Length: 446
Image (cartoon, rainbow, N blue to C red; front, side, top):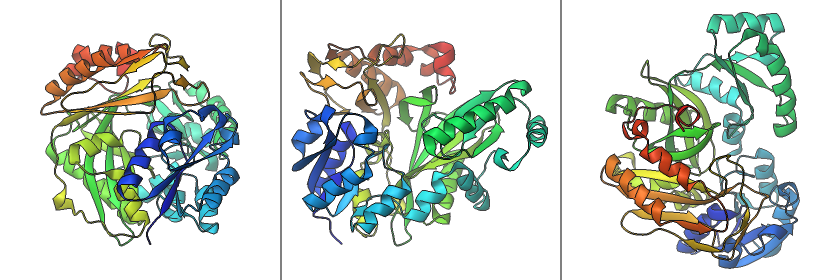
């Protein structure tokens, strides 16, 4: 199977990123766009483009029928969903197949099993992957829930099984808050995800967030491409990612990568994916959190560390090709840091849409920029506020931090506010420099 034309069911920088890999593979591209994105760069760069509806995502980028219709009228062989939107939607993937259009992502069974945090934890336990003991609240009465939480000890996290990106999650510090929070979170989860399944697990007080990039093909071959440290977060939303993680000892790094492979093999995973873990700095133990069955925002970090084009590999896997890479082929070099540049007020974190009056991207040795903005572009208020990713490579972590700060100094986005000053504040903070921080860093230090 060889794709001749791929429809990219996304927008912004990830649409451009997929488009570039398709072009290098000799595959034509179709961009879809909402009325608000008529002047977006991915529309200008694609071989063809189709408007799929008004600005609101539910009427455009989440409109199954509009996207599939666009694929059919343009003769697309496959759909690449990027990340977010439709990338982990089993129903959309199945609808694509019924229309004779390949969904570029893992098999449906993997999507279904790993898309549920509850189901994925059960599979992880079967695969002997370390997990935090969960309490499945939908199967219990209030008294039983409270009894089980007392055994775990506070604080705990209540999580929605279908949640993601920091949504559907609450930390609980008081027993009196548990039942009311469960009731509220069930309602929110049903509305947001169509699933009110919840679970509770122990809250790790001093964690780092570590994720392992994997690639698996349809012939049973699975490899990992090392880890990314995604500890710098705001309300569970990642801000800065780096690789290698400066806290992992080699033995632990090997164990966590092996655990990720064991889980992927257990479900017959056959695409690009990421297995996420919490690493407890106090005990030096790691615990499985979830698996993202898609490409990640931070995938360029791994690409810069390994010189592997993850999007191209993902597309080739969907075409049925065997992985040419073996685990022994993966070579890691340099330290890499990625900064997510958002159109937002750095003080309030509120979105800052509007007209970009001038834009200058950084350059020089070891600098990569994935973006979709340009001078004269109007950032829409309807979508995610991320406008650019600055990805920096250097021989050591200290050199990488210095180079990142230089690149941020060169980055100019006029007409709107951005979080560039926040990135500089983080990178200059003595605790970040000293590698002495956890996932609470932004809340406590910045």
